[in-house]
Image (cartoon, rainbow over all chains, first blue to last red; front, side, top):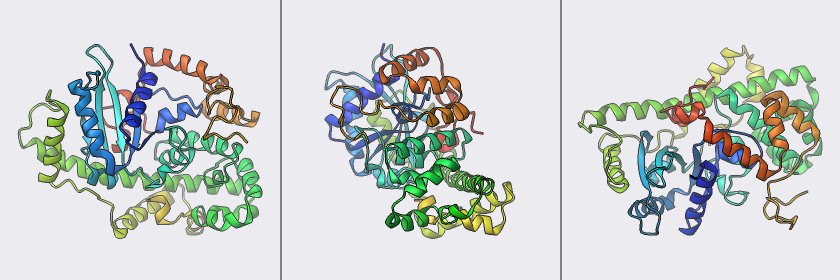
Length: 316
Length: 78
């Protein structure tokens, strides 16, 4: 029986075969970059405007049209449907697939507009794998276990000669080395994205470590506020939907029937397609996260000002 | 510098199969533990063989969580 590694390679070639622009990201991408992650889930970024092709692909895989005879289903907590409007609005879709009757259940998670990356995920992807920069930005979550991966991928990027590593490095000696090597012309844009860099030369190691901690906490707290918006909206939708007497979910229906059912349900019950599509909504999230971060690490207003990245970076 | 966007080595090796300065592995050991640092030093094919064994025998908290990480999943969310 195939394992998760063979599965994601199979799925990658299916995407290519249908000319569906997409890349593998998150844990399995870390594996490709030499960072051991044992999760069996595969996370994918797919261009929202091509998502209908993906839906069609799943329908065909279930019907055995191209030889394979998969079972594909939305998962119980499915996020949003594979719908271009929702995926472009920052939602994720969560599916399960079986390649054959006795195969293991594969979990596939789809992003259309990954958090903190936006539409830049196409840049510098390597052979169907999201770039280190994309994976790093997606890993700037509120899960502490993701942060060593941020640093490790940034160190790899530095040693691979990527000047963008300076935006993500967290080890002060390597960060200083990367900053010394940064071309003068690139420094201004780097400082705009990561204001901490402006102070780098003036900070001793202890002070730098302190500000790196404040900076990390800010990323964590803003991410937490971000996903809470989606989580609350999803729970409200799910409760309302259950009152439709949906019965057991996921159903045993073919995938395309499930898909039509959830697409209709999210619109009937008003799941917002893009909960953070206004600057005001994003600013409110940022302010909440900033207040929480300052409180958790007792950061002074000056420390917070030194590390606070622009809204269009932290909530891209 | 290795061009990772094509296999410029031309020897059939995996384009992401590269080694880094020792400092990198020291940091992996510090942050992720001895075993993950050891794994990172292996050639690509060997890394994947070990991982396949792990996949066949274990589930991670993320695999078992009904909530996807993007909606607060993973029971080990710190």
